[in-house]
Image (cartoon, rainbow, N blue to C red):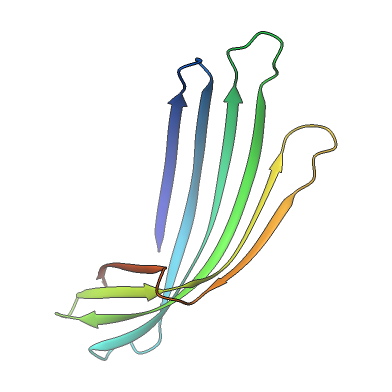
Length: 127
């Protein structure tokens, strides 16, 4: 189980300010946890809140909420009892984003990407 927190802030030359705060939770399922090679299925959900504050007088502040979920297949190669090299390829994902103003409609996106443009490599520590 993994938890993430995110915060970002950006100010432009025109003194417009954008901030982002969010977080997420990921979990992994090991199909063959007692073998040196272990197939995994990683999944997670995330939430982000974006705020935009323009410096121009007369322009209103705006914000939006974003929610996402994704599932990623992968493989672990255990180099010891507790440590493994991990690789995940591609993802099945869903993301929705809605601005906070009257009449705004949510933008929903589904994604399926199992080509080599979405490879993640990392380490796994198993208790």
